[in-house]
Structure formats: structure tokens, C-alpha cells
Image 1 (cartoon, rainbow, N blue to C red):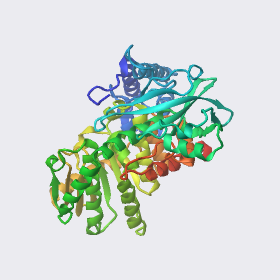
Image 2 (tube, rainbow, N blue to C red):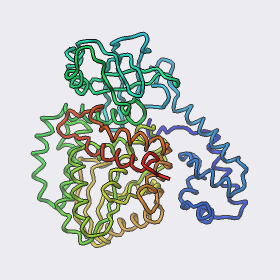
Image 3 (spheres, one colour):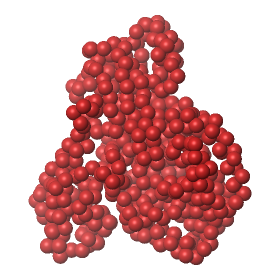
Image 4 (cartoon, one colour):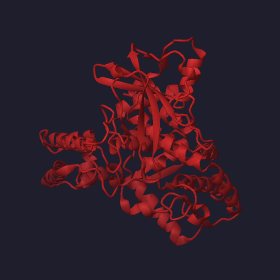
Length: 496
């Protein structure tokens, strides 16, 4: 699903937007006045009144309903529109495989019930994206019992099964029946092989409950599988291209055209561009005299997953955080995420975007989100109080990268204007990381309580047992840190 073909949230959503606008005007209130009275920014009210935008959060609609005296009418319209939205997101052609039960997912799965199989093989289709080429994960299913643990009854000798040792990404899946229906729990074949090899013959396999297949874990598998496959496919060619491009490192300005990496996959070009831009910023950070304001061009979970999984990006965040920690000032980073990018993404991808922001907040970077699409063309930059900027582009750039260090006044003015607008109109404005991340979850239409609980569980176990990268260029360190940080903000950890 793309921004050109977003999820249609229907006539009821349009009626909700129109009703909010009508009631506000009848009350004689401007958007800014109403926003102040319900404890939100004007931007939230503006988006709630726009036809075609993502549905406003339940909390915002509840506050608007109460302030405008709608008597529950706005809440009822939102519930109707939400039902329409779910119906569209769950809709599949009659010939398509069935989605995993209980959630909308970009993954399709052909899975027979556990009572009909033992050692049944199936495939998880990992779809293509704007950069991802698509992949397939093979899996073997076995009956499981949920007694507070996930105990999977696997055949004796499974550790030596050639299928479990086959190259590539494979999963061992336990299927447990419960009151809510079938639940699936997955373990990377390498992790399964290690566990079984250490156990006595015939022992069942324990799979952490945190590895249940749902929007969170399927989003992780989607990103890891697609990034892994592309980088491994290009491994030698990518290493050669990286060596060739080191000659550009000494320049303060350079641009890398597609011809420099024409034979590489889109993901490998992303890696080259991202790595080059990270090195450029670190090389020239001493040109900035103050803690900079960063602007980043990722709009969706697909490209944002690189923050979570590219090993060099985790190192880049750690090094920049250490550089600015001694100053006592807080660096900021702004994302431009228009509503079309939200409605054009399914839940697993939106979760990846939230996790990327959580990773930055965990490093002490205050994140802002600008929703106006006119700012999506702004270049990526690190701005030093309008005196100098380091420019670094790899997302949405025609080539592989474009970098600069500039004190050009018109460029600095454009960057300062964008930053100042984002400062005043951030969709996730808040005084603390929990406030900002919770507001972002609302904007992305994600269930905060469920997601923080699931992230706490997944962070405890780590993601490597579910989705171990094969490429030397990937790491789950950033993903695990983001999960642990987001999980620490939820009710399980004392949130009020």
C-alpha cells in the first residue's frame, strides 16, 4: 500500500471531520482556542477537521466531544469510521492466503491448524515495499501448549534435521490453541538448533512468549528479512563500492550519483548513502559551535528501520550523543511525517517508525514531528543556530547521497524556518519522552498500552532469538534498546 493509494477511511470519517468543524464554529472558537481548551496543539484540531487524514485519536475525540457538547456523537462517528478502516485494512482478495488471526498485517501466511499437522511446512511471504524487494521466510509448525510457558512438542532429532540447518532464514513455530483462537510463536532456526542440541533427546522446545507473531514481531521480521537478503546478495559488490567511495571522504561537498552503485539493490544503495552521510556528519561535527538541530527525511517505518538495524547508525547515534552530552544542552531531531504517510502504512510499519523515534529519545535526543507535507522536501541537516549547517541526504535523494557544509545565508534561512515551524507545531509536543512518544503513538494510531507491554517483553528477551541478522552490516542492538526504552514507559513499569 502506497501514499498514492492510501487506506480509504470512508464517508463516516469525512462526516466526523465535518462535524468537529461545524461544532467548533457554532461554539465561536478558532482552532487555536479550541486546542488550548482541550489540552492539545492547534495542529491536532486542524488535522481532525481535514477530510482524508488519519483518524484523530480516541483521547482527542473524547476531549472534543466533551468540550463541544456533542453528547457522544463524535465518539460514535469515530467508532464507526474506525470499524470502516479496519474492514478496509483487513480486506483481501478471495484467492489470497489468510492473514494471521487478530491483526492486519503486510504479511500473508498459509498455515494449517496445529491439530492437522506435525512438522508442517509453510511460508511467510514478506512483501516488497518502496525500497524492499520482498522475501519469503520458510517455517515448520509444531503443536504447542501454553501453560504460562510456550512448550512446543517437536520430534526427536530435530536439532539434526537438514531443514533446520538449511542456509537462509527459517523459523520453528509453535501453534497453541487458546480462548481467543490459534496463537503462533516463532524461534529463529539457529536459536532453535542451539536450544535443542543442549537438551536431552525428546525434550520439548521452549519458545519465549515474547516471540508471539503479531504486528510488532512481524514488523521486525519484515525489516530484518528484507534488509538481510539485499545486503547479503550484494556483499562483495557492496564492499567494493564502499572502498571506491572512500575517496570522497575528504570533501566538504560531494554528491554520489546512482551510476556509482548502479548494480546494487535499493537497500544496498540506502546502506551506502546512510553510511556516507553518518561519516560526513561525524567528520564535520567540530564545525558546529553549538548543539545542533537535526532534520531527518524518513517518513515511514521502512526507511526508519535502518536506524534500528544498520550497525553504523547505532554507532553514529551513540557517538553523537556522547559528543553533546557534556554540553548540558539537548539536541533535537525533526521528522516530517505527513498524514498520508501514516494512512498509507499498515500497523507493523508504523510500529517501526515509533521504535526509531524511541531509540533517538533513549539517547537523549528530543524528537519533533512536523505533519505538513510541504516540509517533506527539506534536505536533511544539522543546523548550528543559523550560522552553519551540515547537509546530509540519502533518503529521497535521486542519487546515493548529497552532502555539504554550508554557511550560505538563503540555505540557513530555509533550514531555520523549517526548524522554527516544527518547534511551534510539533504533532508530539511534550515536556518528556513518555509524553512525546505517547502522542506519536496516538498520531500513528497505535495502541500505546499494548505496544509498551509487548516491547517490554521483547526487550527483556532481545530480538536476536526471533530475527537474527545474517549480514555483518546489521545489528539488533538499536532495536533492542528501543524496545527496552519504550517498554520502560508502559503500565507494567509503573506508568500512571
